[in-house]
Image (cartoon, rainbow, N blue to C red; front, side, top):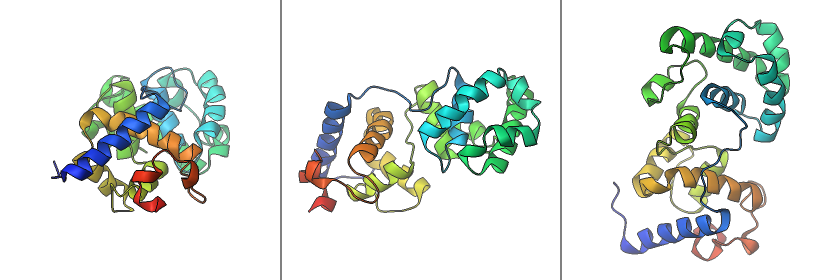
Length: 214
């Protein structure tokens, strides 16, 4: 683990403490699902799309396609129409159908928990894999979405725009016990206060220990 100064470690610990105090520190996901493969497909759909829109789409999608076999046998053009409003619907539809087929043929219809097995599934990168690992299997994982990337950098905890590099930087400095909570609570902060275009530093509970608010 990266060697932190005592002052910086105390600052990071205080950020975590305040996030938990504000948002409860409870494990949760913003994507509606009833099982592992539903969360996997919902996360694939969430690329460049809001969770709220994905939830609207999947409420109908998971009624229409009730099983992995339904997804594996789906017509590509029909699937594209079903998920059209999430954007990038051609690639997403192709990947979801291919992912369902691979889960059935390679893993007996079960979503694997190992990172190296997840990232070879069509449409699944480290971010999607870590969402599943953290929320389904309770495996400490860092998920770097746009909020986590932006806010971690504003807080001076990461230095990069690259999400994979940011993931490893966060793993170096955050205690493992805080990884899943960091994902969830920082997303909440990003939606409520530390927005992309107009961060509300004047009402942020981290302003006094955030270098970007000075």
